[in-house]
Length: 348
Image 1 (cartoon, rainbow, N blue to C red):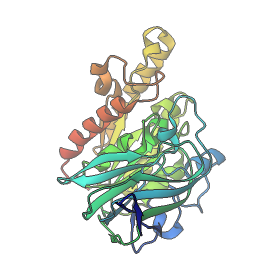
Image 2: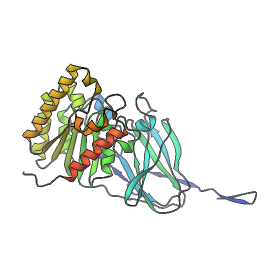
Image 3: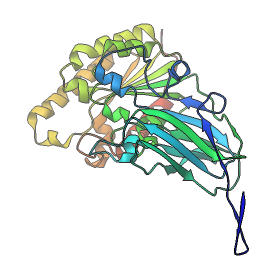
């Protein structure tokens, strides 16, 4: 449509809404999506407890990919609620962020700077018309109920990257779920997914990495899983179930997946441990327990969380526990290094 005003020709582009269908988009990081067609992280038929049932509806680590030559990209979004946590920004909790592929790398370009549960907005506008590949990362700490992509009326749209057969699963605490990344693309699982040749699946459950047998069983059912990253101490250790459940959890996985590689990350630095001898003792005891367990299984490798963060001098958190982007970057950097060293000739 063209408008004329004071001899100036203004082009107003009409927009078209695209539902999320298998024809135009691929959904990544949400293993059960092909059957459920929702943005939940577990099979909805599996019930463990009320807390995990709530948290698994959060779409952390998931994203969609597509390619288009649209000069603008917008979203229509419905969420379960607006932001609700005091120690994490609205974009980090309930936001979506957009990446574009440039020179064979995905780079951040825009995020949803809005704190509402139902909205429509434009992420980018007046882009030079060119076919580009995009990733749109889903919220880390809220249920994504409905999503539409809004493009120019005449723009092309098609699938971009395929869903990879090789899987890497991250199981853990609120840190694995994404607290307190500034936006969803900055959780360590999302960063990993941009640098390794695996489909990364986020199974972080805030406050609830309690080593449930049912979670171990679900992990063994993920076709193509080759790597499991675990960080569970902050939950299982504080609740006293780490020593009781961790080895059984590992046994269930390695007995069904003898060629899997498991990285077990111990507690990240806690500044209060400098002044609380009881906390310090608990952390040290749990570290040694996890290190000794890793020595029993050739599939496992111990990663000292304190060593990973040591150079940051306790500046990696928001509140002494939950990580900033700086902390997430350090985890991702460490794990990328370890993954690149893996030899997949592990004995059966």
